[in-house]
Amino acid sequence: SGLQLLKFVRAEPELAHVRFIIACPRGNRAAEVAIREAGADGVLVEPSSPESIKKTIFHVLQPDANSGRKHAKARSKNA
Image (cartoon, rainbow, N blue to C red; front, side):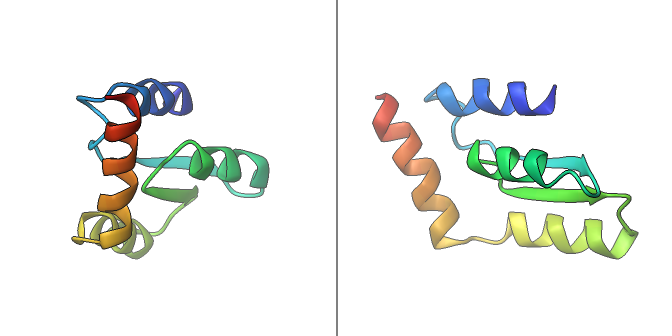
């Protein structure tokens, strides 16, 4: 699953910088929370409109201090 892949990648120091957007079904709040807690950079609630997909991708690709810090922490924790 995408969540398992995300957890694997976040646990690998050389891959921790990889950005992730994962889709989950509308109404599955537990899945959305689990995805965010696992370190996803973005969550798309399906079905998603093209505009929603575009906004999520744009947000994830922006140079964001919080995102950089999060990934740097993951790398330093595992180093």
